[in-house]
Amino acid sequence: MGVYLPIAEMNVDVSLLFGLGAIVGYLAGLLGITGGFLVTPILIFIGIPPPVAVASQANQLIASSISGSISFARHGKVDYRLAFVLLIGGIMGSICGVYIFTLLKYYGHIDLVIKISYIVLLTSMGLMIFIESIKSLLHLKKKRSSRILKERFKWFRNLPLKIKFTRSKLEISLLAPLMIGFVVGVLLSILGIGTIVMIPAMIYLLRMPGSMVPGTSLFQIIFVACSVTLLHAVTNHSVDIILALTLLLGSVIGAPLGSRMSQKLPPEYLRFFLALLLLGMSSKLIFDAFSTPKDLYTIEVLYD
Amino acid sequence: MIKRAIIFFFICFSAHGQTPAIFADLSDHLIAIHTGFKGADLVLFGASKIDHDIVVMIKGPNKNFSIKQKTRNYGLWMHGNQIEMPNIPSYFKLASTAPLENILTENDLVRHQLSLKTLALGLDEKFRTAFIDDMMKKNMFLEEPTSVDFIGTNLFRVKLNFPSDVPPGIYTVHVFLVKDKIITDAQSIPLHINKIGLSADIFALAHSEAYLYGLFTILCAIFFGTLAGFILKRR
Image (cartoon, rainbow over all chains, first blue to last red; front, side):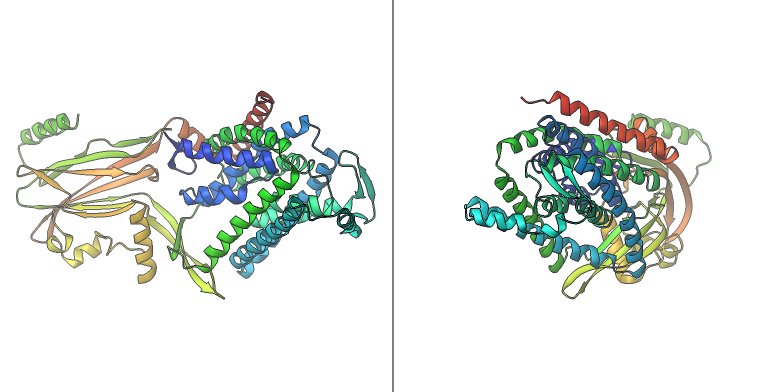
């Protein structure tokens, strides 16, 4: 069954969008990642104009992160105080990010910067999580090494302005999550990826308990997604509500399923799965970047 | 319905006394894009003098396009500079009774921009080929010599197809009557492709009341997200 998307101005199969939404929702619920790095390329691949794909994806993200974080909140797995600090950093970061974006555009290297940062970020994150999760899956880690882990990046958590995050059982500097939020905000507005960097940072830099990570990350992304949606709606008129609603219906069903699954799976498996996703995506990006493309030209309609 | 229209048209035409050189019409003057729109088929039909050739050209609303070439730098493929192409028809279809070179002079092809080869795009050769190839792949550009069928000696018809992602706007169907490489008569028929109903309302709202629309989409997402979060409680 096809549905006509009024902003994208094309007909798309409903079941395709629905399925795509369900997969993203499931990932959001399972890992707390928003899956933008998966969905946006697929939407563009089926012919939806990139501005519409990005904006509508942000809109459906609101729904899947809400339904996902409700499930986490019910199990007490959301650290609201930490989410708030991350959020403040994120807003400041996204403002700076927009400024950097214009600067890069002005100097004309935006395409190169985006491509290389994507590859570097996804590969390094993927490898890091992969090695960690393999170690813990194979029980290579000894008690002694877990103490060493606790010491790692200690200076970062011990910056001034320490406060207590009771839910996460952490007593760390306010500046640590603020800086992470900031960096993620910058990345989000330049590259359109955020949570994929935020989650490893929460795990490895803040030493947050693994079970608190997805819920907290999802909760703070609700607000970011709202502001991104409104910004796109006002400046580009590119939010397609029909596209968003179809994706959304899929994702709200997928998200609770994913989060229920995440209650059952031990965090090592979750990390391993996340690492595989990241490495898969980055190897695809590397392959695409170096192999000769099928179409040597990109043609787009310019929106005024 | 189309058949009846043709008969009706034929009666009018024969009652007309003095014969116009060409007379054509579309089976529909409005294509409505509704929520389930999957593309549309139309028939252009008409009557002409005997032993003439017919050339039909349809042009869609002009849009601004951009084209970027991918180049290899340090082993990486990336986009080069963007070339902007203002005011290019977003849809172009050409149908005729015989290959264009056989029935028209080069001069006329250029003057009326009557073929993909002579369509003015303001691009150099390599970008031009790339653009036209891309538009043909999307079914927006099409050149079909010999797709105009004659019924009997002087009635003709052409089947037209518009894909689901056809840009809305005002289209113009130009019909040319050709004899001995000279255009002897021509007619233009407007065709409206409009969004109707919900999809039209959404598009209008997104553009005229952007804040309201943005807030509405957010509220929708919040509503469905919350609903799902509570309905799909464990089990």
